[in-house]
Each structure stands twice: as C-alpha cells, then as structure tokens.
Length: 365
Image (tube, rainbow, N blue to C red; front, side, top):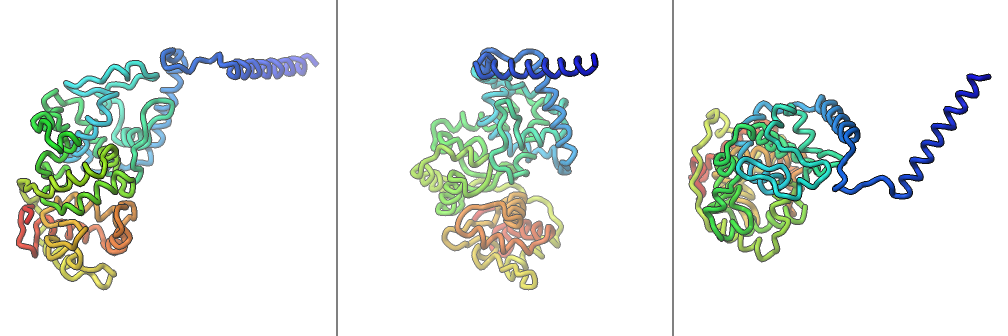
C-alpha cells in the first residue's frame, strides 16, 4: 500500500514539474537571447550531443585518397575567405566583432584538424550543426566541394598569414585594385586572367562569352549546383554578369604544365571525342564541342585545354544527374551515362591536351 502511494506521489510530482516547466515556457521566462549565453550545463550537453552525433554519422563516410591534395586546399581557400572567415577568423585575418556576440560563439579552426577526423569534418561542413550558426553546404550534391573544404581545414593549422593571403586570393585581390573581377569577387579564385591556378579552378579565360554569361546566371538562379559559385554569384545582376563574361572571354591566361597521363588514355579519349561510343549510346563530343573540344557551337563551352580534373568532375556530375545548368543538361546527362570512370579519365585527358585540335599543354586557341 505504501509503495503504491509513493509511486502515485512520484507520478504527481513529475506531472507537476512538467506543468510548471510548460507554464514557465509559455510565460516566456526561459531566455533565448544570444546576449544571455547558455548555462554551463546546457552548453556542455549540446556540445556532447553534437560530438556523439558527428562521430556516429562519420562511420558511414569514406574519405577519398587525395583528401589532403594541395589542389583541393587551393580550391576551397577563396570560398573560406568569403563565406567562413567572418565567423571563424583566419591567419592574419581575424574574425569580425559580431561572431563574439553569438551563442554559441563560432570556434577558431586552428585545431580543427586535430579535434576531428576527415570524415567528421565532412559531416560538419556538409550538413552544418543545429542550434548554432553553422549552416549546411548550399549544394548538397557537391561532395567534391565539401572535401575540398575539408582539405583546406586540415591545412589551415600550418598556414601563416602570408600563406593564407596567397591561397585565399586576398593578396591577388589587393593587387587587382578596383578592377571589374576584383569588385565582383572573382579574383580570389580565378585571378584577373581566368587561369586554373594549378588545376584548382576551371580555365575561364578565353572561354566563350555567351557560355560564361549563361553559366553565371545558372549558378545565381540555382539551376546549377555549387556551394562555392552559388554564394559567389548571389549578388550579381545581369549587367555585371555580361561584363564579367566579356572580360574573361577576352583574356589569355598562361597554361598550366600538362599533367602526366598514361599515353593510352588520351588516345582512347581522342577516339571517343571524335567518334563517340555507339555501343554505349555515347555520342561524339565533337558534334557539339568541335574537334578536340576547340570549336564549339554557340552557347556550348570550349573544352580544349581545360583542366583534366575539372573536366572529369563535371562528367561524373553529368553521369550522376546532379550537375544541372542550362537547357542542355538532359542531353549531357544522357551522353555521360554510358561512360565508365576509365572513359571519363580518357576523355578528360584528351581534352586537356587539346588532342585533335592543334592545342596542347592546356593552351587555349
């Protein structure tokens, strides 16, 4: 009998506490202002839950072999400076005053590579963190961009201020002064001439102006997925896009040295470019892009001399149906669907060399 009474009293007590908590929440007595901060127990509990969740999610992530590739570090550096430095700070470029008044305060990232594994960083960068100011990556399908940011974060602890300024494009932006690409924010990644910077970004110098304008518009309007480029183009109006397209179309960047490749790869790629693969329903690339990718039809990109890694990534995105962009997206998805990974490498290598077009070692016509 006493045991039943004690159990009943316990239930009543718990119900009373729950009712009191509900009334307190309804009355607005629990502070949600950032200026009030978290109770220490709340901050600990939230961080503990976040660590456990990230650790579990990371069990299903397989890092790529080239997770620390310097090319990936360079690819993400400009975006970090534009979109991340404001909250987290960087070597020689501290965070602004507003993040210090956020709850929770965004952490510095000098020890991120030691605190988190590559797979865990991938989950944090790609999916963000609830109950904080950390957003998910704007383009969920672009794992390649997220891995580039992971590579950058792993390299960040070893960077001095001048290294960060060079990699992020802050130094190039300063040198470019008030030029059109500097005002639009393009210089950080593409420079003034639109070169590939060692394969970190696509070659856009010398590209067709109509294609560049359409591409920038597709990024801005969300028809083509890229967490980096969707952020970069968000504030561009049609006039600025047209001017940027004309600027880069008229440039002639210095080519990067040709990357070594298995001699059989470019030869096989040249055959696919010229004749396609009828048995796999893959049309000839030259039908739209011209011989060797050097003489495309209007509105279609020039591919001769483009960076091989970039080309391979785009073909993989087309094959997966996640690239998007432009009225020809469906055509390219069908065209790439019959390509194997080896085929993609071969086509990318041949186009990068300019095989069949008289263009070699990445030099644009």
